[in-house]
Image (tube, rainbow over all chains, first blue to last red; front, side):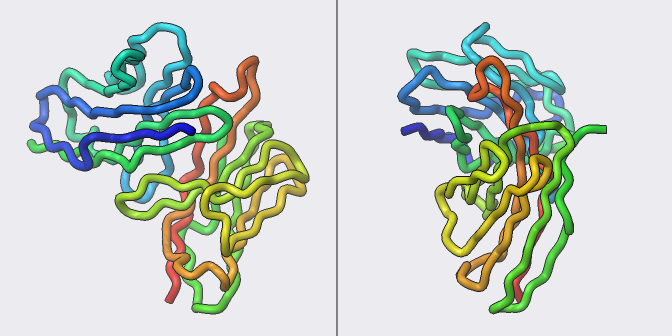
Length: 110
Length: 116
């Protein structure tokens, strides 16, 4: 069985400061891991994915995530937050179907 | 322009009525999925289909039905048996690659269903 735990339900940052969204996973197999972003009343957009290549994955809009097998973590980071980063973020683990975390809501203060 | 479309964007239903949500994709993807999203709960899988004329129940299939008569279409019917249908519904599709399980899913814009 696979599952995902997003450790923070809500993160608030000031514009221009770093963002860290934490994700731990469990999986019986070598997992594929994804981060998706959802803006209000919209569908989900893929930010980045890990598929057993490089452990540091770069995504769109300046986001990156590091896969750490020993810690079963896949935390998402961005060096400098922008107002447009305010959204909900989902960490996802996959075999034949996706298992979603509960989501982390990011607010960005001016 | 390839993508996934869902219609309508907003849908209102009276209690006891069935309603069908549309999902169409022109990405030539084999697999399609329906999710339900409730606040604070992430996404939960309702049904999925790996190939035309075949589909499987997900984690919360009770009160829902689907069909997959065409590769590009995967409509979801919310029946009167679904006790709490008010939610945001998302459709997704996934292509098959050399390692199909590692391909990401592409999501439609969603349909917000409200039961009056």
